[in-house]
Image 1 (tube, rainbow, N blue to C red):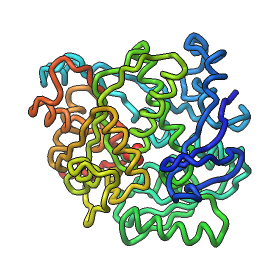
Image 2 (cartoon, protein in one colour):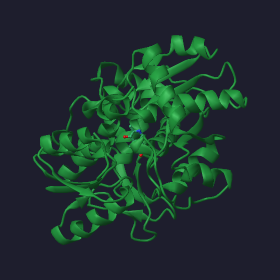
Image 3 (cartoon, rainbow, N blue to C red):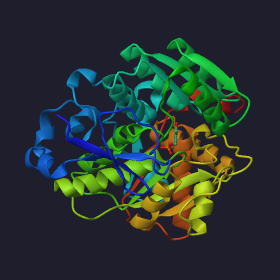
Length: 390
Ligand SMILES: *Cc1c(COP(=O)(O)O)cnc(C)c1O
């Protein structure tokens, strides 16, 4: 059962009832965060309860928003391997290096976690039509779960998105609209029709529950490291749900009494072609200015303005973390290094995390013994065109 109690505006903390369809908070037009009755949950939801549960993200269901089991959709998402990167570790003289391999999720990216949760909860709330602006992976994941739920999918993607992303959505039966512009333009195009045709908008952080799916990465890292969190987590940041979600998970787990107050330093990596979070971090800002002329081979990082920017920055600051930009050439080379040493064909976003590690080791920000986790957020297969001329 779920201990969901209410929703809260991420900026001002105003409280909203949870059993209703919500997008952004009416008070501040900012993301809504799901809150749970953790005091009550902790009396029954103990770590040892997990031992016999299925190895997918629903194993943490007490801290997830879906109330009835019959609404919990599953394609086997979550509980991905946390693999020690032995050969890469040797190459970079870093013995405690790990890769959380999210490419093994349904539709080959960690977007499956968020959309699994958002679509399950939407189903519970009676939604029948769902709409999403996406740089690629989010759309595929949404369509997969919408198909499973028997919902109709509407997708808005930049016209230059690699073709496999489009093909995947069409295979799932979605109506795909290709927009001449960036993800932000797709967002605008989607928003107009959402109101007109009464579709539910599941844009990143514009509804409360994708974040809840993504936070399970934080629960898993803790469980897979036997409830002691690593020193550093490097996360490729677009809309930032994963980073914000993990930070939220750590807080919840501490309140549940599952972990101590020890937290990883959270590192946000973006491409030099689109680095609004890095620029804001360097300027010690609370919010990020939109990036103009965003361009990078890592489609998931091509997010010029994130609605949850202040939540991303807050997590980085609170954790004593940092933010680094790496260029596309470094991203591509690092992707190949992961493939050639670890047998994982990563999405370029995953490659970016290794490029960031190399950079941060050079400056001494990451020390030789820091237990470090790289997030490979997706598979390289849908980005195949990048390798076509190699
Ligand atoms: C969407 C995406 C990202 C960015 O994720 P956020 O949680 O929105 O920051 C990173 N990598 C891949 C492969 C993605 O699809």
